Image (cartoon, rainbow, N blue to C red; front, side, top):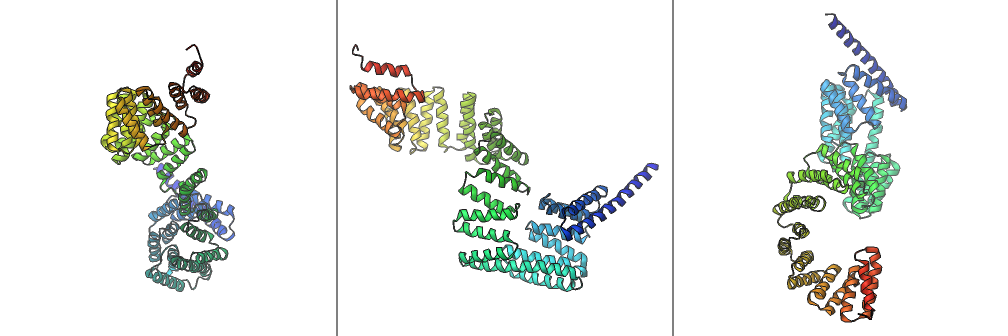
Length: 554
């Protein structure tokens, strides 16, 4: 029994202390509203927090604390709305709780929800609902400023404005404050309406002049720089648009819509401005909206900066929010690959493949996973199985056939390689790569005539492919013994790539076979000079061949 008395006394004491803290918070809050002194704001915040700790059932503490913390930038508008909803749940009949909830919903540009809350506040206050009526009329006006106004909106604005004004007649201080705010909104509305009229008739210079005038004559540069930026972007004046959007962010660093515009414009037109885009994305994270998608974009930006650790961290954060997102798993797998963490990459790729949001996309992931098995792990069986699974998902994936053929070639399984490359050629007969790869396999299999056909087709499709030109020359020189024709292809390869060491070496061999000793010597010398940089060939072999050209004993 004594314990219950102690608990009750403690609860009573907490409630009384909460009331004292709440009163102190109100006084500090009022001083702040008059003097705008940050010390008063901090005192009010501290006392509101103390009041909530001691008595969590005080609705007033929640919505007033939300207003101060949001104004100070400590919480997002979404968090402020949640705090106000808590106040509403504690006391549904508290009109101020509904009023503050509507205020923050309006700040989040959720005008429909805000109007519902304002109307509840009006209903709760009855004849004394002047303030919520006028705030609702102001909200309607702001909604009209932000988009196309309808006749119903105009009528509602007039109704709530007039009815609120009548009810507010005896409250002169509030009336004065409201009319100051309202006159400002009407001024914005006038500039906005005139500018939109000019835009609608494509009188963009006139619209710009109106918005520039609005910037000078109103404290709402944020609104009108945004509109000027939209006009410049519509006219493909990207740099001017960016300047306008940046000025908006200077005025309000947390203007979400403009941050999104900056990100899109910069990524589309200035992909090298990575640091600036990263900064804007990090600001967008503060809104706690589309967080996973933002981390995903940040991950790719860090990859472009070659910041592997941060890219991995960003993709991980995205996956913490959406663990079953195949695209996030794939990107994390790619980031792990860049960081040479191949076991982790395999796990992520396998997860992405198992989710399989789209057969065509998943087949590309199979190709990435197969490459790790083939090139890093040396697990040919797993690589082949993965490539084949990708082909089943997307039988038209040309690159998968090439990768599968390359794996067979690495195992020197020439028959399977040739069949796979031929399947690729059948799928896409206009791509030179299939013919080039098939030509190598056919040559290794001693199918000389077929290899010649493949390489001629590769050169026909892509004449500027120096490697195909060189390989075709090798077939003529070493396969047929036609040094003259071979030399033409080697020289063409050199003309396409003046630093192609092997082409100089082969040109020297062809020239030597034709008896062009001086030309052969020049080509061998070039091959030897370039080989010091490329280290493709045996330097002693080149020197020996060059020496033998002038060795009269042979």
